[in-house]
View 1 (cartoon, rainbow, N blue to C red):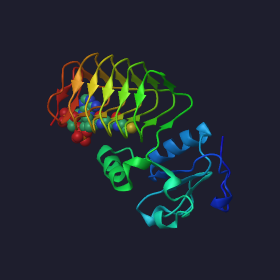
View 2: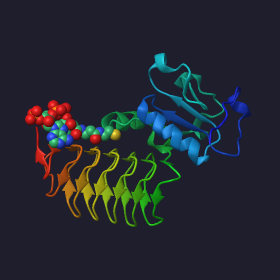
View 3: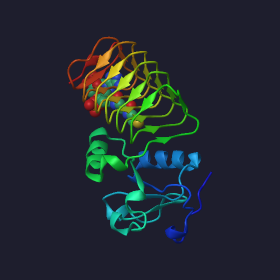
Length: 221
Ligand SMILES: CC(C)(COP(=O)(O)OP(=O)(O)OC[C@H]1O[C@@H](n2cnc3c(N)ncnc32)[C@H](O)[C@@H]1OP(=O)(O)O)[C@@H](O)C(=O)NCCC(=O)NCCS
């Protein structure tokens, strides 16, 4: 479902909250698509710190605006989502913009247990699964078709890439990238700031930050 672009944002449907997506890249388009599918928000705008990209729309129905060009009426009532795939950048912008305004975006096709805990500012993409007891910290990304099994804990601003699988009770630190299709076996821990390569199988605790890849995963550097 597409929300029609409003020629005057003040004329928007005010019964629903407004949302500003902060980001202008491919990940932001994926988030915008989920937002539009959800139908949960009245006005959806997008922005970033680069004025050059603030022309045209991020997607049809999602206008790019400059931060200074935001309608003042939206002010603090406007929820924010930092739609940046890179973990450290997403964390930095979230801290600058203010954690208190962060909204979580969930694609309607995601399966999120009522017994999962999801903090503010997360993005849960299409076809992903969050099992009972899963816990996501602030600003976590669960990308397309990733599976987060029961009792998994994921630290703030981590990114679980498309198709990755986190086995039951796996513990993922903060700002971790789990690459596309990677598997973290049940009960295994991955420390803060680690990068897990695409297709890796993490069968033992990752106690040192750095890049880990392969089957079983070994430290690359
Ligand atoms: C693991 C990874 C981070 C390494 O990236 P990098 O630091 O740029 O490393 P390089 O591409 O220089 O590769 C270094 C070596 O590791 C190997 N390698 C790279 N990625 C690998 C992977 N996923 N599994 C196994 N080996 C891998 C390369 O073949 C190369 O081997 P060589 O030295 O024998 O030639 C990256 O390849 C990767 O898998 N990123 C995850 C991407 C992803 O899923 N993103 C999600 C976006 S939503």
